Image (cartoon, rainbow, N blue to C red; front, top):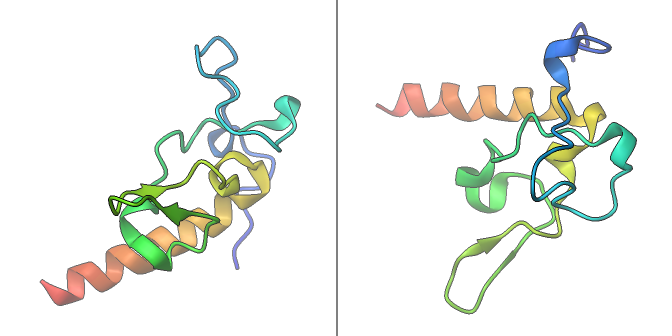
Length: 92
């Protein structure tokens, strides 16, 4: 996997003034990544690879997932999103 994104400013952003910061527990606040505040993998359902559950009404609950908020997972998200986007474009 290409890791040219490591240590680049575009791969990490923290919005410490956000009313919800930090929105997920279990990630060091000093390295908390807000870049994917709304995870681009959400729509992949059970194929996202994250730690999620479904509520009784069928809503995907990602509150237990920290993948998008860890700086080291930028490459993972870009790779998964690229594959999903490529698959979608082939299907249409």
